[in-house]
Image (cartoon, rainbow, N blue to C red; front, side):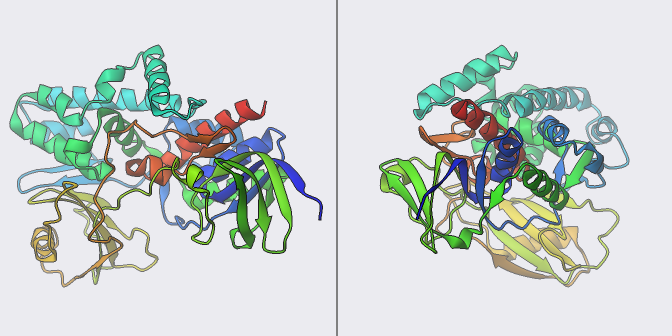
Length: 421
């Protein structure tokens, strides 16, 4: 049986890989994709500069809409809302009459850095397999864009100390670590800046609509799909794939490969698997059920609850059923001290007179909470070999959520276009 040849084969295509495949197919390359199943239909993507750039290339700007989501920080004595009826400056002035100017200036600086980083990271990634060379290339690109490269790699605690007073420091510490789900000691300035800029955007798009737009543009560009469960094996020589084999025995080859999340039955050669990022460590999670069908008007859709432990409560998230919410925690990587009773006590002050149920889910007790090193020490499409690129955003930039897919998908497309010529 003759082998079919492609310019690019995308294996395990999630959203970031779908973006790269669509952009390259639109450039006239012959692309074959084995799409993975990802469910994010009820989620939205904030319209950061990276998403604006993508939608412009896809002619899909009309899909954007005004955001109605907001984020709220709730502590024993503070209630701060982002995206609510009052501007952020007024919220800060009410809660911090003596420090609101310095807090707003710091957040504005993070916003400006996040805006630049969002666009910078969509460009061609450093095409080196060695980490020191990738870091050096990223450092040089940051400097060329008037970004403070060394400061961006510091922990966020460093610049929060410039506020002086303890209460403003602690508040922004809890807010930023809560929206990133990264313990403050492990949260870099770059990561906080990107997430802050994304969180505060006034417009967004439904992920289901973006996925449908990508599917239509991919098909219009003659991109091809084969279900992932029809893939039998990846043929490799050391770290270099030479092609794939289907369950029906058909052989396919390509000049380049883009690797995303793989099913368990697909095995990679040890030499290649060792270069791919390990899966992200998950935060501890609970599902709340039995909540009021209508969210209390005083609470935002996402609430950062700061007390003994910083918790993030998102209403009706990843669930088609009303009266449910997702709860996630931010905790030191080496500790596992938070118990369900403590969580219930914190929630009782937020949801008084509510008989809800709390069910822990989705996290092994042996897992640590976050990655072991500061971003951006791996947060780029990762060259696994001269003909392989690893792009799965949930592994490389877990705290950015689905917006990381938009950034890394475009970066992967520009890198692969440069490789293919």
